[in-house]
Length: 341
Image 1: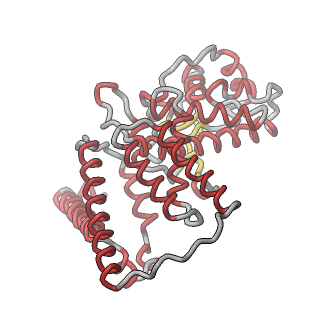
Image 2 (image 1 turned 180 degrees about the vertical axis):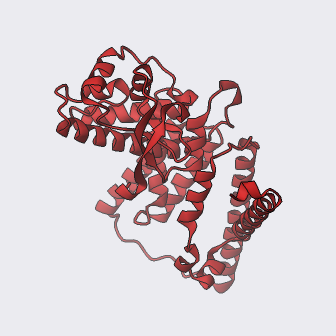
Image 3 (image 1 turned 135 degrees about the vertical axis):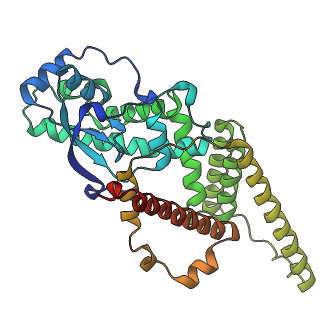
């Protein structure tokens, strides 16, 4: 996360959206209100480009009670659409489709990083802003700067887990992330990486996390032990014949195709169509500004070689839908000159 991902702007307090994920007992806000009245809001709250609250629920509620009409905010630009939609949920009866375990873990990691960044900024603000209470009055339970790395980390992971899943499932989510890291680690043996991938598939299909995590960690320890204490050398196996190589290749290809089909079916059953979340025009402009000039960063031949048929069809669909949408926008502007103005 870099400084370029943030920008500061003034925002009307009433326009900031607070979703269902932030609802909880805010505690006694009077000390925080007194601190803000005396010192000002040393650390701005953090929002998405669409004005959805990410960090600083107590600070927002305190300035509302103080009657502030506007406030300075940090706008965090590089937030995933899925996390934005999760944070913006307003009604428990209209929640999006249930997250898969891997989706929940990915959002947990993203939100944990955002909360840690907010805590770091708050700590710096309290250090140089004259707050003599270690940041306590300038943030409270959902935003207090850390007194030690361990306390800071524990607080952040717990809060992130609660906002994503509704309970303190941080240990479960951390284990899923560890399995994902093992799967993506090119330095590990291929058999270990494939094992982690298979266990993640089982978790997404509804199986518990703890046994899967234990199996992979046990396999890693055994592989490391075998590397430290190699067995006595044995006779090398006989070289396979060309016919045997061809048959093994055919079987491996069939197995890979069957596994891919099974995973696609699992994902299709777990994900049902959802009502799209409407975003602000500013978010649209920001998204396309980040894509401006993207074609210069890719090689046509490499993309042609690496993309699957499904991935290519998805990109073509997105481009087609985007062109149709912008043409519709242009048609509306042409029909009503006041819109263009």
